[in-house]
Image 1 (cartoon, rainbow, N blue to C red):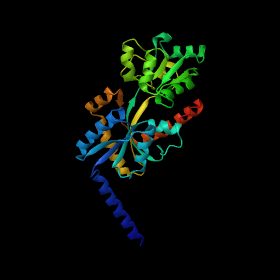
Image 2 (tube, rainbow, N blue to C red; image 1 turned 30 degrees about the vertical axis):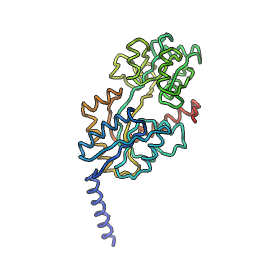
Image 3 (tube, rainbow, N blue to C red; image 1 turned 180 degrees about the vertical axis):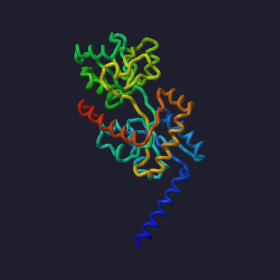
Image 4 (tube, one colour; image 1 turned 120 degrees about the horizontal axis):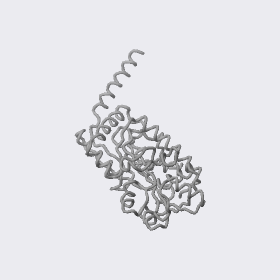
Length: 319
């Protein structure tokens, strides 16, 4: 009886392996929890086109924005774990979960991490009238006149806001938050000098830096940006390990067969090495990365812990 059971289990495992080896056999859907035209959407469509060509199978992108990515993320988490529903997203679902623990999804335990896709650098910029040229000078000025220097963001809980709170907590710089309802509104306030400092994606900030309308104090992250190699990284600028960059990645529903996750990881990593694909990413201000599934799972878990601590220490509350 035991031998028969062992044989049956071996046969089922073999059949499962054959089934996974033939993946994908039908249309694959990539869910993007943002509007069309956003960075994650462009990444998903770029990868989807390449995967469709490689697999000879249709791959479509489905936009499911809303509720700070909760709508799309919950949909993916509840989808069948068969590899035919995937998600490409920035780290917003992780940040949103740190702000809203009751959000109806779990980025750590409800999804399988497939791989990291890209890094988007946030840069620390200031209005020229503030009179600072470096991040250290900003910290010194903020300590000298606590609360007198204000900073903008597109709203409570946005990456721009949390990056500045992380900066404040690490450097003990006392800055006053002025939230706006849109990214455009925050940018115009900074350009007009109504707020004095802000974190912005590098591709948004650089044109204004080149026109001397903004001063670039540091590029976000642990290392210098390839786009601004002469500008110190945030960690380098203040001698503290700081990483407030935005990352992008691919997820599948929890329980997706390991063989399918492995194939997705291998195929997408291969696509990320194509120069033309990397150029598309670069035009969005992103650096293609790639990597292992277990490393991405660890990044997701550690980022959730980190932002939860930042939110708690800052006392950030959202509706």
